[in-house]
Image (cartoon, rainbow, N blue to C red; front, side, top):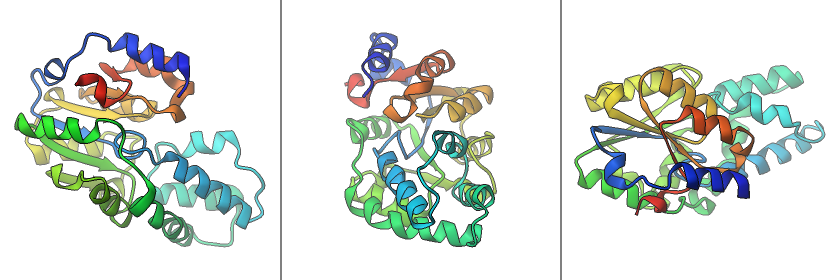
Length: 235
């Protein structure tokens, strides 16, 4: 964890309580990777192995930035086009999925306080949804292994609605399912692009600290309505 970024988050959020968080709130939408679970290292390992297997050298720093808000298939097609690979986008997505399945089912752990915040929201009759770029074959075993799956009333993958987190469609669709308006719905995300998109659509945004977004920390703090160093700070 970046020390300066962590201090900024703590200062920004020093007076917020769990009850203040839910004032006027009827629904909550959570991102998975980097928000509820510490999974981004797994994808970094997959990128390194995939680049090595395809003789592409080291993973360039701008690659992760470019794909951060894309859907799973968009990432695969972008990679295929950028590096002119012989595999199709669908084939690349299948390869990545196979590489990730074991890690999501057995290795990835929930962030501190993740179950506590979901349990608290549920106890307050707040509807809970998951908005993810991942496939069910990855997110279902990951959520179940961490005891989080049963808390969600709705789960949606951006690919299911032909979208990505570069537009607010997934948040708006989940709000409809929860029968909540954007202004009474929290969106928990760790990536700047997603937070900007949700906030522009009038959702109340909560930034969750993840070290992979250190470079955007100051702008994330300016963009978000609230920020959490981790979920335990609420309890």
